[in-house]
Length: 177
Length: 177
Image (tube, rainbow over all chains, first blue to last red; front, top):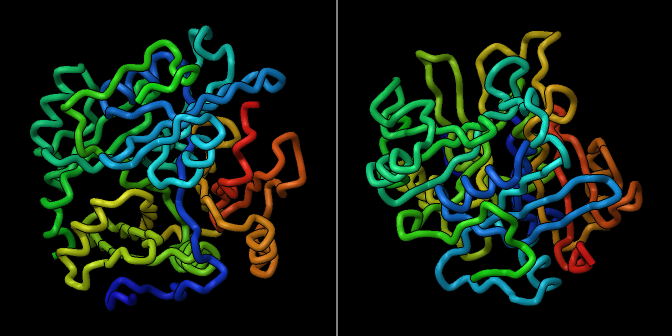
């Protein structure tokens, strides 16, 4: 595949050495896993596929995904671990033990200085219904779909302040026109 | 699905309102798109599915993915845009015009203070072959698979310094034992 107009300088065609590579997950640190997991499981319907506790290093990892209908997550723990690391669209939340009890502790969202990471994005079937769902769950908006220059795109914050973009794919065909 | 032992306090079962939600992409800001795109297309075999230039706001977005065999990316631009926002495992790179020419400009990787975002992760079929491929391409390692406490897991840096974890899923079944 080669899409004219999408290939700026520097782009190369994939080679055999990268066959089977998959973008598996994105890792974000969270202050309080109870709050973060309540948010991602309630508001975005994700499930915790694996929880890994590292006693010696005093941290826990939570791997969340939203399996599609027909994708059967293995019951067996070892098989489920392998499955989790084979997927796309996984979110890893890291909890360094004790941060949840520190009043002045907060992670950096990457959108104020120093900038870097910007956001994760969920694609949803119905943007208006999703906005109503967010409002029913008191989700904080950065930008509603009708605000700003980029219509049909919403941004909300998770409980740590990380930005989450929300789009309805079939309304974005006009982008770049 | 409900996996005993993976469900800490706060976790809720998915509801109908979140049906069809997909974790579509992760956005990272990059200083020089030519270098970043060369890296992700060469080293990780990704393809630029859509490039969007915002003249008025002086930035460009590059949406990269690694379609699986049998996943046919539409040729038509509008259809391809919709397709891109419907997938999982997409990487969005944002270029704010002009940063590539600023000698002292660098983005923050989230792993030094102030911490937040940690890394993205690729799943690969053969970790040793991938390490050899990285070495052949002069990729910078944060940690080789045989270093540190967590064996069988590598971390490299992209050209902006963001960390990329690299795992071979079928070697991680033991995690948490």
